[in-house]
Structure formats: C-alpha cells, structure tokens
Image 1: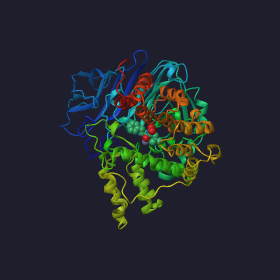
Image 2 (image 1 turned 90 degrees about the vertical axis):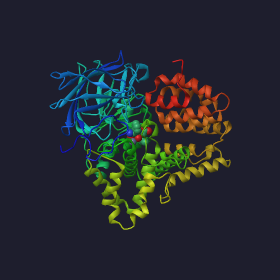
Image 3 (image 1 turned 90 degrees about the horizontal axis):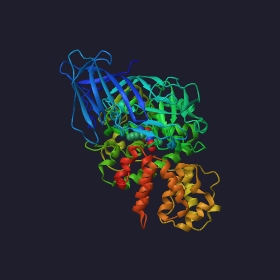
Image 4 (image 1 turned 30 degrees about the vertical axis):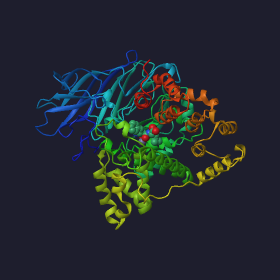
Length: 608
Ligand code: BES
Ligand code: ZN
C-alpha cells in the first residue's frame, strides 16, 4: 500500500491535541486489552511504532484523559526498558499530555494502562439496556474521546495502522474498526488488523451478544440476535449503495463494509468507524425509510476516512462533502424527488440552526474557531448543511459532470491524507476555479467559508412532494378534516415535513384530531415520533405522555433528546421541574456525549 502515515508536511497545529507530530509521530499501534465488565475497565498495553523527524525529536507527546498509566517502556512490551514519564496538568476537555523522553535509538514505546470506570468514550450497558440478556460495551471516539480509552496522538491529522488483541467474556463477540470476526471464538480472544492508516477518532470497539448476517460478498450486518432479522431486511440495499458510491467517486478502499446495530442508548445516529459503521437501532423503521443515514456513514469512507479534516475547525470538509455525497447516492438509488425531500429537510434544519445561533455568529462560518472549547459543543448542523449547500452552489455554477470530476480527483489525490481549509481552497482554485473565468467571483468561496449565514448566490431548494404536503397542511388548517387529507402514499419524510409545518400554537383539540386519524403517538418511526412529541409537550397533550417517557428512557440519541428536553423546559406551569425529574430518571441510560450536552441544559441531577 502506498498510504502515508504520520502528519502532513504543512499540517496546521491542532488546538485539541497535546501531540507534536511534526517532531515525533506514531505510525503503528499494537493494542492488547482485556475487557472487564465487573470493574467497567479496559486494561492492557499499547505499543506505538514511531516516526522521528530528526535529532531534535527527543520526546513523544501523547494525549490521555482519565487513564491510569501504570508503566511506560522504551521498546516493545516484552523487551522494553521501563522509563520515567510525566503527566501534564489536567484540562477537563483535553485531558493530560503524557510526555515520554526518548533515547536516540528508540523506535517504539509501550504504555501499560487501564481506563477509568467513567471513561467518557465508553458506555457499559447492563443486560436490561440491550435487546438481550448480556451486557454490552461500545466506544465513541469522535471528536476527542479516543484519549479516554487509549493513550494516543488524538489529532485527526495523525494517521496510523493498527493491530489489536482483545480479550472478552467468552459468550460475547468483540468488533473493531478493523478486520472483524463473524463468529464467537471459544477462548474469547479476538485479533484485529487495520492496514489502512486511520486517525485516532476512528478507533472503535464494541463487545456484546451480537451475531453476523451477510448481505453481499463484502457487506453485512451485526446486531443482537433479537434485532438481526429486522436489520437484515432494513439494509437490503447496502451492496447497491456501496456500488453506487464507487461508480461516482472511485473505489471503496477499505475492503469490507459492515454495519453494527447498537442498543438504543447509542448517542448518535451513526458513526463512520472504518469497515464497521455503528448505527442506532432507531433507524430500523421497518420500511427502509431511514437508510439515508447509512448512505451518509458510507460516504464518509471517502469524505472523512480517506480524506480527513486536519483539525476539528475543518469539520465541514468531513461533513459537508458527506451530506452532498449521501444525497447523490440516494438520488441515484431512489430518484430525484426522494433526494429533494432529504435536501429540503436538511435545508429547513439549517435555517433553524442559523436562527438559533444568530445571523452574525462565527459558529455559522464553515471554518470554525474551536480553540479553547470542547469541539463536541461547537460542531453543529452548519458543517453539514451549509457545507452541502456550498457544494450545491458550486454544482449549479459548473454543472454536475465538472463537479464530479473534481470531487473524484480530490478523493483520489488526497487518499489517506488530511486536508485543512486553506489547502482545500488552494486546491479548489487550482483544479476548478482558475480554469473557469469569473467562476470564483460567482461562487464567492471566502464568503461561504469565512463568513456567516447563507450567501445570496445559493440556489433555491424545493421539493414537489413537500409542496403537496404543505398544501395538505394548509387545507387542514383551513378546516379540512384530517381524515380527508391526501396522505395515502406519504413516506416518513412527508410525515415529518407535515409535523414540522404545523402551526406552533396547535392545541390539544387539533393534536387529538391528528392523533385519532394518524396515530402518531404509537408510531414505530423514530423520526416521526421525534417530530410529534415536542408538539405534544408544547400543547400539554397528555395522551402522549407515556410514549414520551418511554422514548426518553430508552433512546439515547442526542439529536432527538435535546429538542425534547428543551421543549419540556419551556412548557408552562412546572415544565423545568418535570424536565429535571424525567432527566434524573433517564440519565443513567445515556452516553457521556449526551449527558455532557444535557447536563449543561438541565443541570446535573444531584441525587444520582
Ligand atoms: N461523524 C458523525 C458523528 C459525529 C460527529 C460524532 C461529530 C462526534 C462528533 C456522523 O457521520 C454523523 O454525522 N452522524 C449523524 C447522522 C447523519 C445522517 C447526519 C448523526 O448521528 O446524527
Ligand atoms: Zn457525518
């Protein structure tokens, strides 16, 4: 493989890492861990092979947070020499620098360590929190949580290959962002290899009672036994998605593409862990209506995993391209009107976020300034939807064939490298803008990237199918009974649009009529529930209370939880008290990614 490891020659410094990869960088990891559910810890060692750039490179700096470092050796685990190390001051977000002085001939370093029981990346689930009878563990490393389960150079501009040996209870399967087993091993020992260099935020591990079912020669799905059959049906088009993506932007570079369906407390919709995307079970709608999320995570196999944002300030390069690519995949598979609905929902979300952040907020720039902040709190819809909108603007100016050639070439020429915003603009000029006179003036990339809001050269966004939904909504507001609305062939996207277009002050009588007709409260579609339940809170529509409580205590997906708790807080009478009571009850089921956002919103419950 011609893939390169280590930092880019001109990489910008990463404000969220203590590492100094231009001096000494990591190149390969051998990870040995034992998973202990009783103490909720991982224990073992990590051996890093190093690349040193000159005689001045005398010290290795790794990121760590809440790790218990037991010993550091210069060299391999079995032959290394114990050495002193130093842990720098602890920052609540960045953790601590682990400084290791190197000898002139040191080429590898081994760290023996264990994780803290509350390690932020890890969620340890009791059997009751799963679909089965066994405990479950999963990691979530993006953006800067890898350092809570692994001492590493936790910067997206630093890539390494890895091998791992993970020991787990014998009735459980272990999976990683690497070559994976398809069956239990009687000794509970699993070996993994990731031969393509990846950044630390793509390190992932899951351990649970999961089984595998193939979907095609190179795709398949892992899930708990009770969840597997439904998942196999839901993701039946997975091979077609991969094939379509390859037709557009070049070969899939990671060999296999599998999905792992997690228990419902997973804090995201999906996470693009290489070779093994992690997904929430809340996309198992039974009708394949929420699979654009899979197209999104798959698209990251190019935008993100192959060409990676250099720092979290450049996050739009990961997510903007991915949203654009996701919708192109969906258009090719399911047609333009379908993709237009996704576009319109995304656009409505963007307008919402812009209104939230305010018209001049620097957080509405594509290029962010997250120094001194937890990146997780600064990463919003802007990178996704404004990033996509920027590419749509470019598409409309140069046409699809020219844009597709550019994107394919961009992925191909920067494979297994990182990209920062300045370098991207330079590349865009050289490959596209400079050869089309007047294009830069019409595109105004700097206004999009370094300015707030939506520049006025953005193309209009519309959806025929939503126009029909909006007309139905209007007619209902003017008195047409719900039962007479033309909803026969509506997909979940149309229902979500319908719910989002309801007047803000819809009251109990109106919601009752809708619920009696469409049974939203008992919907099995999480997107419909997530659009419906806030309405019921605002109106004080009590027949949905039980469904709300069930949702809040079962589902840990932050995107759904945040709006629900905000609505609860804003509810009249004892809204805040109720919000806090429900939160105190549900919080033990949430991952730290969700609780860190919700604690800030609701306060940290004291009685737990
Ligand atoms: N990589 C992101 C998830 C992420 C972003 C985790 C930033 C931590 C920090 C993933 O690809 C993603 O965007 N997931 C979305 C779904 C997508 C369809 C918009 C999600 O989880 O909601
Ligand atoms: Zn994404």
